[in-house]
Image (cartoon, rainbow, N blue to C red; front, top):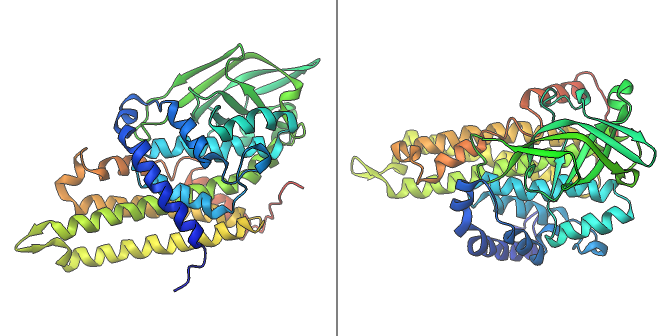
Length: 388
């Protein structure tokens, strides 16, 4: 049966990436999970292999490949069972770098995008605030123009790579009186005076650094404004489609990995004289889980294909994250149950996976917010438009 989405070249890439991750990343995962800090050498290795440049222009060192290479990268990152490491990578590549690529001028791209693709710089995206949560329009961080500079004051929270990154892509209000129509996007170097970061202690995603960041009279040149002033909200909304799809893909991939592990375990674990994969209750539950995962996976591939074709898929990507993250939580919960007491042990992968998976319905827009966005589109017939 021909594959609708992946070519032979895609599968060769998947195989080489899987080998790379097993050799270069897996041996360090336990250490990074304990320390909460990913060592810098691995960023450079990813850059040298071209993994940060899959979707970016050749002009800046990228490979300009179709979106299904990105799908493969996301799926394989889930198989090493560290949601934190995976998040640190994709937050750099598809959150921070997306804004640099889409809104940055030539000078910004030459400095930040080139170094990001090579692995010499790591970025983070700073949107969420302590008092705002999923309410982007309610942000309080301000950027006041003074001559040829902007002065930024405020705070951000739950920022992946928020402590150890080299630069920050920051949303701030340049005209607070305009609400969501007064937001702008900036790039700021980490060592700019007035920036401080506090590392947060999380339930899961332990390998990634998640920070709360404060901006105290941070002064940056006007040249660090990205795109047009006061157009930040449409930029953010436009890129949310990719972020949500990424989290949907992550979800189906970790559920698939959990099912593979559980199936192998069940084929080896015996009870009452036979392996437990022969008990009808477990077999049928497993069949339900596999069905739920496969439906989400195929829908996510369809949405990825449309996005790769240039379609504006904000509704479908929102549905992807909403349904896939719920599915992953349900499936991984059940896979842990298949292992019985061993599922609750840290030495088995389901314990960490269940903690890491729980972030899915929260990060990148809570499921409650996503339901309201979908309701606005399908009930109120609100028509979100891309930035032109």
